[in-house]
Length: 123
Image (cartoon, rainbow, N blue to C red):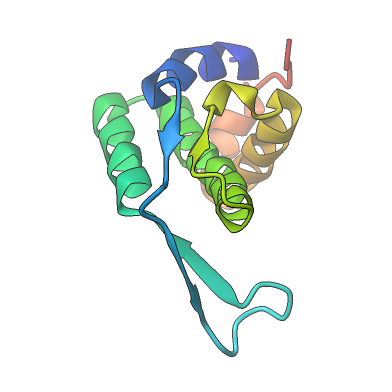
């Protein structure tokens, strides 16, 4: 299974723009030293829930891609929100960055079977 095959199946489910205009940041003391605030958007979270529901949990590669995309998109959304930008084009996110996070996630113990047949192709 290649990254691009999985990516191409899942990316359309996020739509053209991810809206996080209802977002908010909350300072959380005593968290990691470099990141002491939390970003939350109900609209973005609902979209993530909808994508998860659409994909289901039967195809583990797709299931992990949904989680990976959420992780990366959340990082972008948090940064953009601080800059006064409230939407993100998911297709504009660098695929190499997405693949690196996917590969990191695949290296967790519970994904050994998937990792053994995964091919790191971005194009």
